[in-house]
Amino acid sequence: MDKIPKLGNLITDEQYRDAVHIAVAPVTAGMHLYPGDHIGFTNNGDAFTVVTNANHIGIVDPFLSKEVQEGDRFYMFLYPNTITSLRHEWTHPDFEREDELSKMEPTFFKLKGAVTEEKWVADFADSIGTTYTEIMDAAEDYLSSGEYLCRGGDFEGYSIPDEFWDKFEAIKRRRVADAERGSFLSCSC
Image (cartoon, rainbow, N blue to C red; front, side):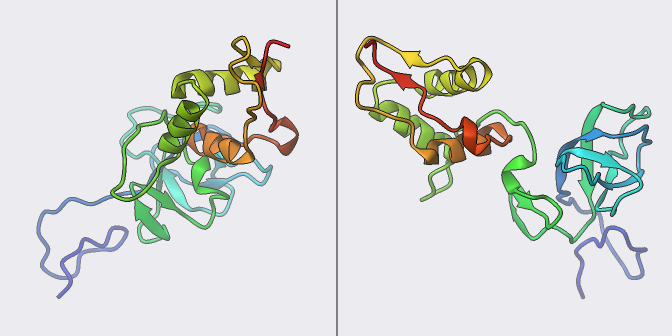
């Protein structure tokens, strides 16, 4: 007899107290919403904006004590048994990319034998004589103002590989257009 709670179904046999994992994602309200409303993504290509008149994949955080106004950010609780993998970060077919789920700051948590995006960036930064924080801040500056990271001749002969931008996207949980993916390292010449 399976004793795993089957959320979304009435209890039909003997069950006991338990704890469950529920996949959640930070999203933006595309309209006025109420806690528990069934929601899905808008069709305008914005991977974070949710409304009620869409293909439903989850609900508005049912624990909220007030209504959600258009533009508010909140957690969407995905329907039980719909995610396709679980590793503290999850995937779901209606999300275009796993790394678009949230704008979480890097944690530097390491999985045994795995290299996280943050670790890759930290190692890359160290290999060119800078730090994780400096390279990530420099990437932000480059994207917002076109500013290059220049420290005398320290970066002569170095460039930013495309793999850096893949890791940056995963860490920052946002896309960087191909046209914006450049090398922002500069020597003083």
